[in-house]
Length: 483
Image (cartoon, rainbow, N blue to C red; front, side, top):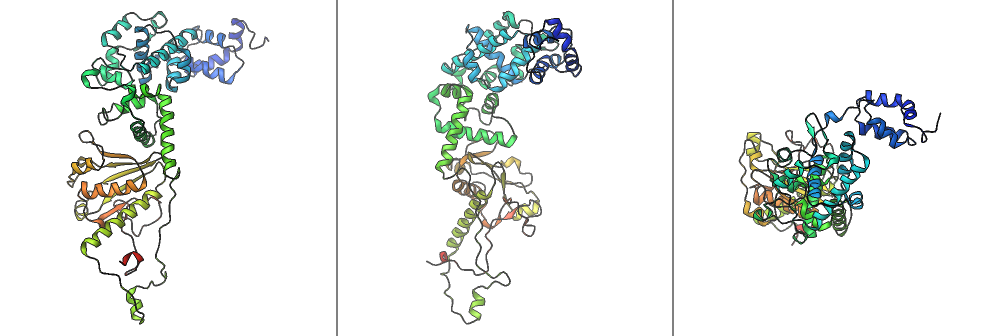
């Protein structure tokens, strides 16, 4: 039999007929069939394989099930920019800078419609040229009429991409509905393009509108989001995340990020480096859990001051504290316990804060007041909104929260702070609950157990939380008690 790399087309089809029949029978799309055959048969002739797969002799699935993903809709917008501005392909920028999802999804879709490899390279290369130009000129606009004209005069290589309910590029109405929430401007912003009404909306996309500190803090918040919901930090996920009503206008838009760093991939690299540098300045990449200091007592029967006096031993008592001093010390102790629990919290896990007041016990509304997520960027803190409490009324002191650095949410959203050190997070959380949420009794505070230790004797039966009041022997004296 001829060598696998020296076959005629007829010989190729005879040799691989069983393989191609099997791939078609399993319902694989033509692009997936090519990929699988290439991986398992590295010496296979790719040109003959492409010709055979798209010959019609074997009926592959997949194309009839094609859907308009965000990647394909975004690619259509970028390609429309390239065609409207008559850009030549920039193969190097596309190869180096495009997001992996674009390189994977768009070529596979085009292959399933038998678009030749050279034409696919040209399409992706022109998208690369458009994105490079938009990074250098972030106010490049694509008006609705320009996109409609693009659809009316499609380049020859993509004029046939239509089957059933699917066609690419999709209509403007479809992009507006699925990507832009019925807004062309919103769809453009999500993919890093400039809407025609940018000036009227006060939208800023130039590079100097974004400081490294702002981007570092924003990226920390975005990575927290990705960790929490198990998502990859892709370019289009950031675009949609930044345009969410709770964040739109508060965090940098995708177009500004591209203008600042040249591409999303470079921005992600730079942002991660800034986060690592900030963590290094904080002392270590991982904050170790520290053991809880315990008083040196006899575990069989601990002695207190009264026991010692009963044995005739003189004891120097601490100076009595006033009510204000006792209260201040209680709150400071609470912050210390909070700091300890945050240090013990493993990365990528959350800690919830509760306020078990008599009202909470009476109503049975054990909604947590605060959620804290620990990530490589620091601690991300969210205050539960008043609307989330079912049976109790919680009023927020918004003036205090804003002055303390908490970010104002959209209506019904959560106040947040991000990229906090352990000390700043501990102090900020306790003060926000005390002054901003009306939690004015230090002994009502509880939290999840960050170590997961079995503490059934102290865990609350409704929340599983544990108290935040340090437990010591009665009358136990420490040096700080003396003035």
